[in-house]
Image 1: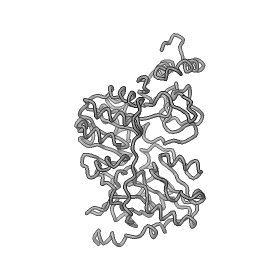
Image 2: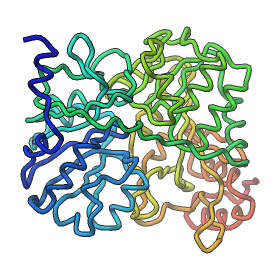
Image 3: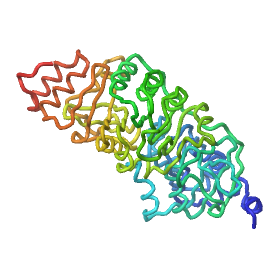
Image 4: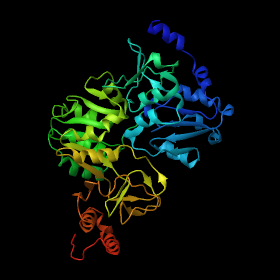
Length: 446
């Protein structure tokens, strides 16, 4: 049987495909901009027939149809590998939960877990001449999802970019049970917030630490993108990319002629990433681009892959940090904001890299809803806040007031360094708290 004949045999409507979902099933919706769309709407039509359907995915870019009803939580629960704003709202409605894991561990988790995926459904690019459906910018862990799923349904979207790569960036038609032709919606976008003056100040401090030939990883958010914009405008050259998430800033840097990958120790001349989320500009750049390398997350985020690259520069955000050097990048107290992701992998890997550095950056302060200004540098993390990076692992910390290397410092040295980059209005109170915690020397000066 030829691939086209097999395609027609497996082609069904979304409504027909989702009939395989039963109450109590674990259903995987894919990841980020590859999240099921037409299939999701068809499954929502079956809401009254189903209970206790456990749906899994991450980084939602729009509200799934299955959660539009007020009583959605009586039928479906969302289990997220990494939270977005939409998922935070679902938590408040009582129908979503975070699944803590290092992102790099997902492929093994799917392959080893006791509870197999009942049904996997996600968007893909059109089938190629060899019978493969490309995962688009979401290689991530999807090959492992397919391997662990009892039933695999692909939703073909003509707008999904075809992302080339190394391994595990697509599924063959022989491993697909049902094919659904979608309405070809535009690929969901997530534009970075515009850079503030604080973002630009932080970015300037970091860019000054980056050498020619460095290999870059940028996290999500305004500050890492501000760093990318400054790099694009800088005199840096011969840069490489090995990152978890591909973002618009990399497109700007590449088009400015700063990226060629010639100094990379692994995957020379290729920009390596696990998934990509940005604007149409980025998706168009990724489509059929042989310079880019779409790879599974257990490769991109493996500490051994990261550390093998000389002069690895890892740049990520934080929610807050304390005087012990503990970094929280995923919650506000007990309120889940994002997830563990791959930040710790890159913090560890960058330090193991020859000449490598990891930068955790944040603004020195933030405003609450009532306008109160609070410090992001606190004596100790608040109850329920998650330690994403332990005090033993943090390297460089950056705010608009400076950059400090806290690796290996004694507690009193670390407290002094961290207070030095706090907002001046909060330094005295932080010193008082440090004294109470016995991590301050009276002879210290800031």
